[in-house]
Image (cartoon, rainbow, N blue to C red; front, side, top):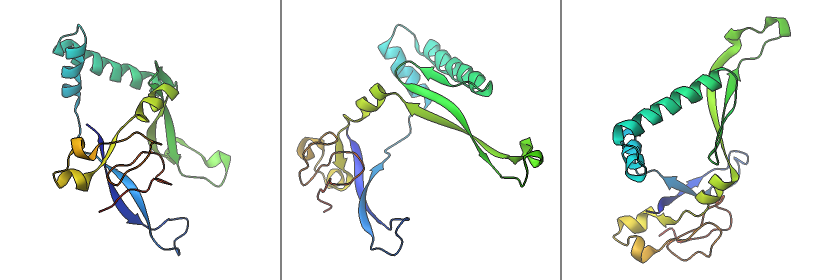
Length: 165
């Protein structure tokens, strides 16, 4: 299934006085939960569904343990997880305490191979799909490929003109 995209008109926050421009945004169709991932994992491995679910839950527990120990966690060619902090500044170094930490965030930095696989995604305008002109007719191309009037490649949206109607 291709990634669904739609046109959105926005003001560039760095240039608020300039006219709005059109940008491509991705439309999330649904969220897949760990049970569904475990079922798919069991279909593609020798694990049964319960074992796959346990492996996912244990992986989560292990990743959290290492992150809380101040370590970065690299999972094969997926990429690396690490913590970042949102903090409030203080007037002096001595005034800094743990109370200055407002939020602990998780960062995922995908590996080059992981990113390369995502660059192969196909994109279809959601309005074309909704109009009954599904993937077979609308096609779909990969990022950086030639555009037609119903599909677009990926990237930043710059230079990828496609039909918005």
